[in-house]
Every structure is written in structure tokens, then in C-alpha cells.
Amino acid sequence: MLLMVLPGAIWFLLFAYLPMLGTIIAFKQYRYDSGGFWASIVNSKWVGFDNFKFLFSTSDAYVITRNTVMYNAAFIVLGLVLSVAMAIVLVEIAGKRLSKLYQTAMFMPYFLSWVIVGYFVFSFLSLDKGLINRTLEWLGMERINWYSEPGYWFVILVVIFLWKMVGYNSVVYLAAIMGIDRSLYEAAMIDGAGKWSQVRNITLPMLAPVMTIMTLLAVGKIFYADFGLFYQVPRNSGMLYSMTNVIDTYVYRGLKTTGEIGMSTAAGLYQSFVGFTLVIVSNYIVRRINKDNALF
Image 1: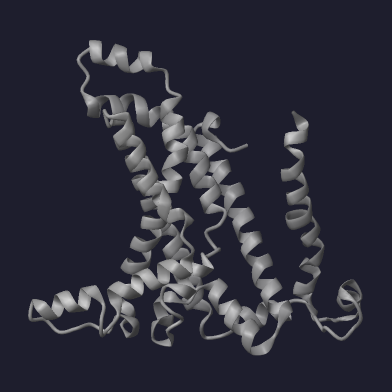
Image 2: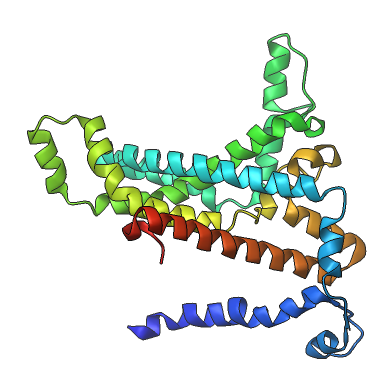
């Protein structure tokens, strides 16, 4: 049985643990021409925290940090509520075939790449041929140049993310609900409890540990942004940077412009450190409230 764990263990070793040795680049002015990969790391000039200063001393530091945290907070809260609600609704569907059909339909968007989703969104928001603008024109209203109006994009990006991810995330809660002892619901029905009462007094309390763990894991990535969502869907429009520029896209553009590997490594280390700290603090708070729901 342990051999089944081996592929996953090798993956984590190669792509999660060994790369940690490269975090030293965050404190160096990395140069490609200093020999091989490891030789270039050793021979590169030590600059201390200069890469971090360069990253967060710019005028965009507040905007990218605000956007990253703001979007992820919305994703965590709304994603949790909608995923749990969707799982509960799917369980209550009487027809098994119909339930499977709905599950498949809501699961499919997860497998679409953000490039495809970006073109899908463009077909709705295009100024000339977009479905929404054509509808507005048919109603006698003016067209909206969506890709130059940043005020709309907080709602657009949140809706697109939820449409793509909620179906996938609901599978975890659906599996947890299926594992609840059915005798609890039967006893509740004998006592005269309706569907909402069963959900409130049985389903949600039984889901609380899973919801807590999933939220703690999501909090650990609150300083990470889905690059494809914020780069492909807004089509890298400079007019939208005030609402679509996040840490990941900012580092990518900076890397393309300056080639500063050290700065991008510093950003990744900063994101990991903040995420680790938030998980530890959040888990400590959960343990103080209810030890059984804590992650560790």
C-alpha cells in the first residue's frame, strides 16, 4: 500500500522540497553567466533584502497587495458558501441520473484552461460583437467598453472564478455529506424536522470540520493569485491594472521587463512566508475555539 504513496512523495520531493534550496536567490543578484545553475547561485552577489525593497517600495505595492488579498477573501467566503450550498442541493435531488448530470455539468468548467475562459468571456464583453453589448444596444442603451472600465472587474473576476471553481470544490463537501450517517436524518424526520431544519442541525454541524480545514488551506494561499485568471481573462489590458494587477502578474511583468530572477524569488518567498504564518495563526485560533476542527 505504501507504494501507492511513492509517486506523490517523489513529486513533492522534486517540485516542493528540493526547490526550497533555491530560495537563497531571493537574497542575491542572480546572474546567468556565473557558470552552471548551482555555480551561478553561489557566485552571484549577495544583496540581502534589496530584492524585497525593490518589490514593495514601488507605487504599485499597495495596489497589488490590496487586490490580491481582496480577491482571495471574496473567493474564500463566497466559494465556501456556494460550494456547500451546491453540495447540499445536489444531495437533495431525487433523481440519481439527473443528479449525476448536474454534477458533471458543474464540474466541467474546472477543466477549461484560463485561455479558453478568457476567449469565452471576450465573446460576451467584446465592444463590437460581444453578446452583452449587442443586448444593450438592442435595448437602446450605450455600449460599454468593458476592457477599459476597471470598475466592473471586481464583480466580473469573482463571478468567473466562482463559475469555474465552485463545482470542483463542492465535490469535497458532497463526499462528506454522503458519509453522514443516514439514521440521523431518519430520526430527525420522525421528530418532524423539515429539510431546512435537517440541514441546519445535522448537515452543517457535520460539515464544520471539513469546512474549517478547507478554509485554513485557502487562507494559506491568500497572498497567491491565480495567474491565468488575472492575466488571461482581462486580456492584460493596461487600463484595468488598478483592479486586475496582483502580486503574481506584477512579478511576471517585472520579470519580462527587467529579467530580475531575484525579485521574483523574493516575491514567492514572501507569499509563502505570509501564507505559512496565516495558517499557523488561523489554526491556533480554531484550536482555541474547537480543538477537534483544527488542522493540526
